[in-house]
Length: 239
Length: 239
Image 1 (cartoon, chains in turn green, red):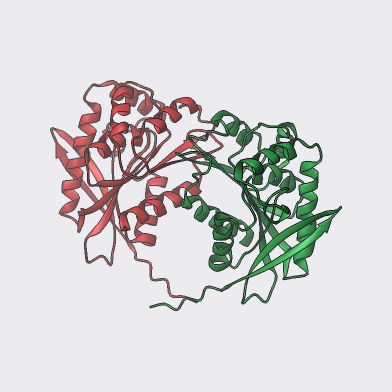
Image 2 (cartoon, helix red, strand yellow):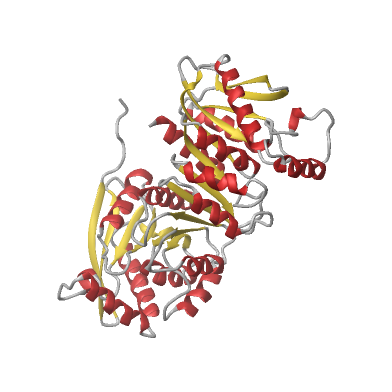
């Protein structure tokens, strides 16, 4: 029976202040790390938070199977950014307002950049190439981030289309992407139409892109795509 | 440096006669095989043949990486079924006529079944679960085969839509599929429209199905999908 030599996962909470906003985050690294590590930034979806099940599963898989570090931060009005807990519909309603605020995207991009500076003090990450993974709200903020940060060399996006208050910004930033991209779409997504998803996939400028679709609604992305995501990110960060 | 313990690939040509038709085929097995092997049937595309580059690459990958056997046969009017070589356009034109012949699908299904009987005498295959891989013409004949043979437990189809003379048969057989399916589509396919591809994907009855799309024309499926296909087939044949 082969010895399991996969590294254990160290989880380090952190926080950083950006222009009056407190940004709570989590960093996941291998306990055995002693050199620079590739890093994946994970952006959660609306109503979720930085330690929601699929974020945690992806982060742990990246660390254990590939020795790739991962980090996540709470989105605006989400997770530990809230002083008072609220039900899902309330959080979603607030997000729709936030999404309409003209500086929402620039602020979240600034939050990611500040969080990146902070994790560089915690572990040997952020110097090597980075990847981004985020669906739905994670794509709304993630495509603009990936389009402006040349250290992001691979991206997983999806569950989003050319819709909503930032659709023109999203389209412009998508065109400017040039890293390899995996785009995840749900065939029966009742929030984001198939047509608008395909418009966003079409807009992505990267010549190396692929679309993976599965039957089911918005939140029913199967575990298979988490596994593929981790392998895809790790492969591109290793090369 | 780890020892490479991957099996070598044994290639065995064979032929079988079915209702006056001679069907030439190839079987690929691990040289080290000593027990029953899962088997993947590989159906090539129009104008190609049983030993075209991508068929050979997939067969060898299945044997070497997964100890899964593979077989291929020439399609009607293709490869060694031709007495006189012809250029690609001639073969394609002849295939369009063949596709319109009312018994074309039933005959090719019978050819596959006869070939399966033949390879059972050559190696310990055909008793374990089987998989099917075939795009374009390989899907035209492969979906009907998979729909009627319950031993086919996993399928890779694509580069095809609900089009052509057998579209009604194809739609009926697609509905009857219930094995896990990977459907491969090319985003800029100039032969098969995106809409008709999506109609065929929609028609497939299997609850466990996924669609993978890449930019590019009909014949530009990237190596990534061959690698994914092999892993997908092997995973489902092992379980």
